Amino acid sequence: MTNSKPIIIWFRKDFRLADHAALSEASRSGRPIIPVVLLDEIVETFGAAPKWRLSQAIEHFENRLKQVGSQLILRRGTAAVELLALAQETGAGDIWWTRAYDPKAIVRDTKVKTTLKDAGFEAKSWPGHLLFEPWAVKTKQGGFFKVYSPMWRAVKDLDVAPPDPAPQRLLAPEFWPDSDRLQDWALDKDMDRGAHVLTQHANVGESAANARLANFLRGSIGEYKDRRDFPAQSATSRLSENLTWGEIGPRTVWHAGFRALQEGQRGAEHFLKELVWREFAYHLVFHTPEITHKNWRSEWDAFPWSDHEDEAVLRWKQGRTGVPLVDAAMREMYVTGHMHNRSRMIVGSFLTKHMLKHWRIGQKWFEECLIDWDPAANAMGWQWVAGSGPDAAPYFRIFNPETQAQKFDAEQTYIQRYLAEKASDPGPEAMAFFDACPRAWGLSPDDPYPTPIIGLAEGRQRALAAYEAR
Image (cartoon, rainbow, N blue to C red; front, top):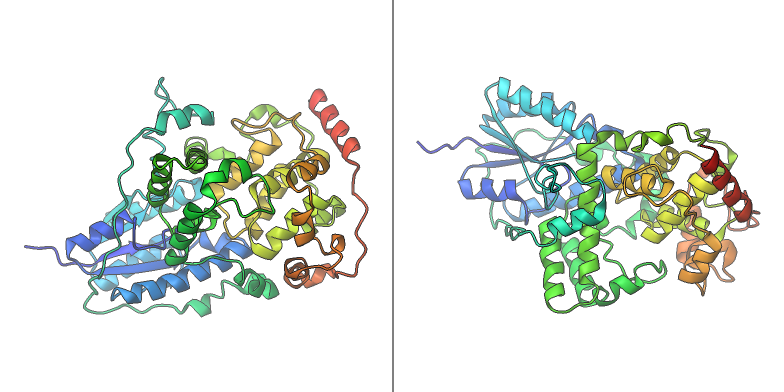
């Protein structure tokens, strides 16, 4: 007898129809499909910008599902409780979801699977967030990779299955269960007035993600390796936002990049390397989950970073350190929800080395402000620049924001784009910062530009002295 019980698919950070293994298999089964999104115990802890961006992803995905004859069910509460209740209510036989790898998600998902199976339901997690499962990629000794380059060499020639096409139609259940309304979740409330600024810069939804990839392949990929470090240039794919929310699948991106490589696009291999850098972050988070909250290298536990959030930290958050490239980068994040990768390294180095502040301060602030916030990439990135992480930049490598600006923003295009006080005629991005930042900061474009919170030479010497004395 053919199984006709509905399949519940729990969407988390996989808001797409194509390149979705669980959805593809469910569609082929001929069984009804009930898509669900939960505002669960982990989502409730998201920062302001990620919550807002999640709301945009959900809204677009709701509309996409309607195009294939389906709809999205929204429920709020503890994941295990809500999924069990929904399965009992709908008579579903299976509950499926795309696998996650960070420690908080693993704890939640393990509890969900145990609860559902104990109640007699089939619960299954599927691949789809990564190209390579963290346990499947091993060193020659059978362990996990702690350095990126050997991992790249190990995976670069592995076969990656082609992405599944989007189903043209999803079979609806006999009745749809009740659903919350997205607006009642108020996921944008913590953004306050900043939401309308971010709306102008976010690239939301599966169609937009695929268009972004296509534009990159037509334009910048050839010069990607040479131009990617110049923050004023549109030389990167900007797909981190869409990969974060699963609006495009990693297999889709990999195969597109690989085709570009075969066609002779000079920057294609480096683009694929950056995709594997994302894999490396999750590889490490899975095997060493402590990377998300404490020094990966225990010898750094005694390093004299301060975790006190004083006036200097506030000025760093505000983009008012008095160091133009640092401040422009911080304001870019507030205006666009994104920060150029070169800029991330510079502001991270300035906080952890010139200012001698703990990397956790920066990690938490990025978690609050980035629309491409990713728990693995954020943790590894901060520990890399601080020196305490795997494959990290040596601590004595201290980015000098002035020489970095001379090298990568010689015309000060990027600085003037986001720093109103440094532009004779500030443009819309520079002025938008004052609409996006908290009212409590009381900032105005008429304020004088501040003096540096610390001299660059002084900060460098202090950092090196602390490193030598550790």
